[in-house]
Length: 208
Image (tube, rainbow, N blue to C red):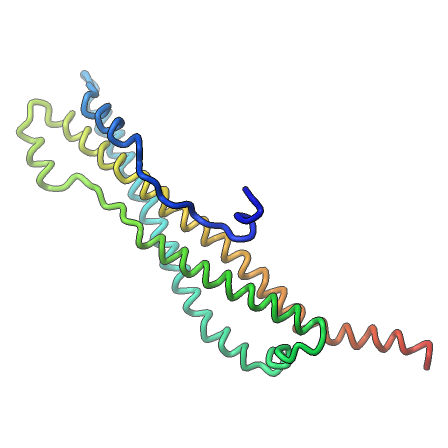
């Protein structure tokens, strides 16, 4: 991981799947022998796993979007807080630091929102539909051909599902950074001013 990726996690640009055609050809040329039923069960399991990964990623993205949207009125109310408004005067070091932390938290929150939304826009929709099932029913090896169709749908979806999951992982990382900086801003707002007054009092104490 580079320093830039540590500061701002991101999902790389989705490149073309260079091996998908070769993998599909291997599936088409596969021969199951007398174990077609076992291979069909395994193909169904893989389809369920891939569908489960897709659904889990989409569910998490929807939860994150809802949570981030729910934070908006809270953050807006914080901007009207007297302490935070006093920080904008930038007349001491802790007001500057607190405002920077708060701004960074907002930036990471926006990034998490965008990343979570992008996870929902990645399409992974290949499946074995009615037409394929009906067509394979009249073939010489219906179970074997159905197994191949299921495996091909899994293979076609894999890159998109991986990309979708990648956006969810990035959302996790951005949310962590958002929470960290907002908590730091809250700590600065809450403790810096009284601590600064306390240290000033202690410094003036011996002189008095």
